[in-house]
Image 1 (cartoon, protein in one colour):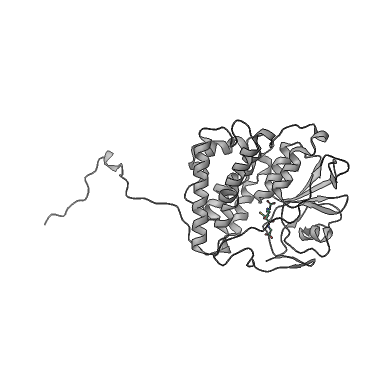
Image 2: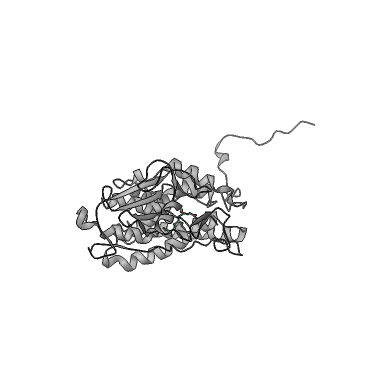
Length: 325
Ligand SMILES: N[C@@H](CCC(=O)N[C@@H](CS)C(=O)NCC(=O)O)C(=O)O
């Protein structure tokens, strides 16, 4: 697969680690797991202007972080570079906005080389970079949003808590349900290399959406009455679903628009102040369709049932004429 090997970038197709013998796509664990803390003695202490986030607008994992950056009022505290394009031979490319010591344009793997000149591994977004030490803090979105939720509160004065103590068990339960079934489920469908692996993943996506629809028709948010991290983790997949995953990843039994509760829930989250600016709808569509040549599988939907009764008899009609003999 395309990644750094001992600090050297090699462009090659996905390896066995990512696509198993059964054709199933397996996401590799993020290896860099440092933590920003609200303590001057920490390895990575919370400081305004010290950290920089590399994202790609299309990426749902990176988008968790761009959403939290606005939700937690961190726009002026954590700087941002966003890749606009499709991932190419060089991986993610930063074309216009970036930071020292990186030239413009530069591939994301330059950041990993700067972190460790003999780095082995993928260069993924999001990547959280420490400008002061020239090291990567973390490349795991689930961790980055947890840091953003609390580490900078004393600097920003923003006290919104998307991971409150009393709801943690419930948040974890939803995260553990939605990650395999939906967040990663759409990728397991879209990147599958066998019909069986694809169908299993795609059907799992709709089982997950059906369960969420049931729950959200009774409950305002996933963890009950409060908007939490679990909702934002669901959001970044839901908002890409109809424009991207439904067609390009062949998750096409239903659209989010076909689910009454889910589609309204998605609207509420999208309309939360600042969030819409982190969603680039056209770009998401373009980029997901650019990935569709990856497999040659036929989609599980749409489901077409032409056996249900029709309503044409409500109109005057006489059937077919017969020729006089
Ligand atoms: N577990 C990671 C996943 C990040 C990830 O897979 N990002 C994709 C983009 S959506 C990526 O950068 N892939 C680059 C590659 O596979 O080479 C996280 O949530 O932060």
